[in-house]
Image (tube, rainbow, N blue to C red; front, top):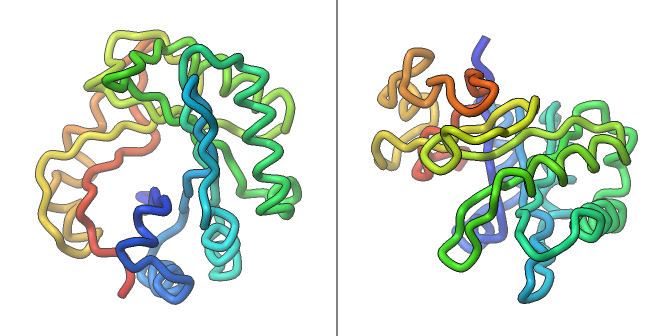
Length: 206
């Protein structure tokens, strides 16, 4: 069974994301949503402005699986990045500990100023799971981490075959659907992604 989700951040608020649109998205078939929470690097710590408002709106809309994504970086200890994420979630979504469908999204990316090695994401994910009892999902695209050890986390692969602004279900079909290229096995151990992020241009809700 294919479930559809939405990966969001304050950037989406700037483009018109509201609680009403989240309710519309749920009605249209969105079953999970994540929202950026924290990003801690050598240059400082970012805290999302709208994380709490929007993820709570998603809970109130009845979306069953909800997550906070944590952008990981080098040169900051695992303990610090984990503590920052948990503290932020406690302050802005205090319901998360008792919400059965809550999970952590580890955002592992290679940046121009920080070529983040895979073990950073793996270490943060493992500690978050150990400290909270909540599952972590590893957002690490095949294009950046295709041959790397990504642990035993469910994989989240960003792979955009094209960019056309259209309804998210039509976009999935255009990208190849359940047989699309984003479902290719990768990493060590080689596994099929559990989530394929197939476009950044989909229309979700109105």
